[in-house]
Image (cartoon, rainbow, N blue to C red; front, side, top):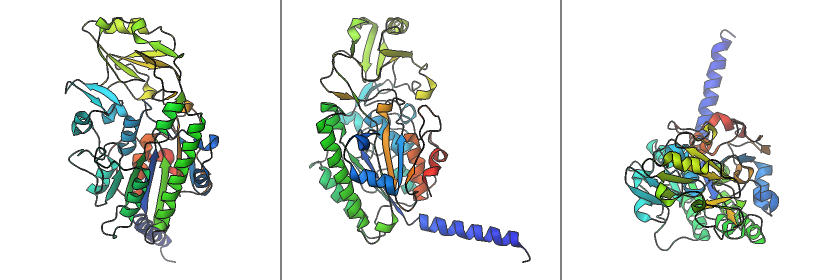
Length: 406
């Protein structure tokens, strides 16, 4: 053998080319179950999710702060923490527009000015791939002037129920090859709704968890049955945040500690941004800093591990209650809530993945507070890797979770 080094390099290049070619033919489906707390499969009957752990990857995933729906779904899509992606809470004040953003206000929710970063569907499409998105936060908004290849407006009538969303997912992956999306993102707004009303530890939450397991199993089986997709299907099930028990007895009333003349507005809940009246920022902070069951920070002084507090969409004072406590004008009647410190165990999210690019029967190690733990900002680079596209610069890092891949 005259030059073994050149032969080794040639073989390595050939294998890499073969791997890339195979990689580019796979399809990636990511399903989000709202409030899919990490231990729901342990508490309740979710046989399909259990089978995914046995045949694929099982992990606990940290959400971003605040652990709420809109900030975290947009983080999953962009790889940017809420402090950087613009959606700093479900509701917030934007001083530049002098308008409040609210998921219930169409004028603000559909304005692309609020959404920063590049969603993964835009990344994929800029590099020649098609993406189908069903009700994911941001998908019905022209972010950077771009919509997903296939999407549906949340407010469009009729609003699709869960079965219709499954049908649409199957339809999109049944399209002719040249029209078929290689990325499919599907959102289901349960078990969040049920857990809010009845709490995460309840008979109702148990029934809904089992129902969602059955629904997702049906979606998986139907996609696996598609001749051109089944063997090439990477299937991910995860969520945006966890859920914890709350009660009116664990409540801190805002008006018991501050005077209304000290604030211009209060936005968001868990955490709450307080916008101070001129000259009252220190007064606000000092009035709240020693209150039991809440943590209080000045703008820009939020602990580094929360990656929060620098956006101009956050108030002069940021207040976050302890896990299971409420800080508001009046207590909620709900028995479940989220939005708390993203390191709290009840806020952690379940992650399951199965398919040709994932290991089998692999459980990712998890240590609370470990900076190398699986964060939801890592989903964006993971999806880009599975699609074989170059990611935009983001807060996530594929290296943190590369062990879940073959």
